Image 1: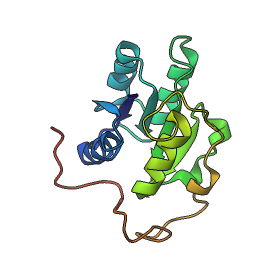
Image 2 (image 1 turned 45 degrees about the vertical axis):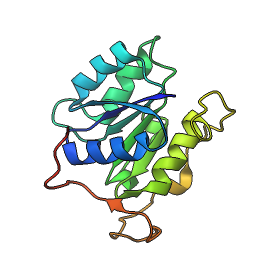
Image 3 (image 1 turned 120 degrees about the horizontal axis):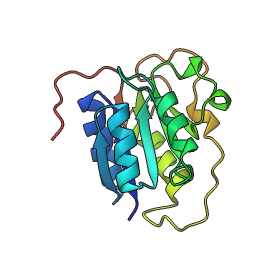
Length: 163
């Protein structure tokens, strides 16, 4: 079982990702802001990190930079969550990939498989090239390009609480 860190100041997004990722058998740890995420990464040494691009204290791009500058954490893949991914150039960040909001189950599962291996076997061979088809080049209308059998989420969420 792999350990995944989710860093997001929106408790609804964090809870949704926690539910989606735990269905694949991975252990989840969460942090509510960038600095807490950095501290949690240092303590827990996760196998994969999802981080929101925009947070009030330390955003995902900056967090990825700190993580990749730390020799004990630089091996951890970092995926930035963004509703404005078309404004980001992956090559200009320290992140390994970008997941566009709204995201669906298939997109999250594809990221998990790409960076942690098929199923729950983190030791399986992996292709860690960025998932270019998950980076949208323009604004995405709610539900556009998603399978209707999979829920999508956009930012910000309302009415969710993190337990």
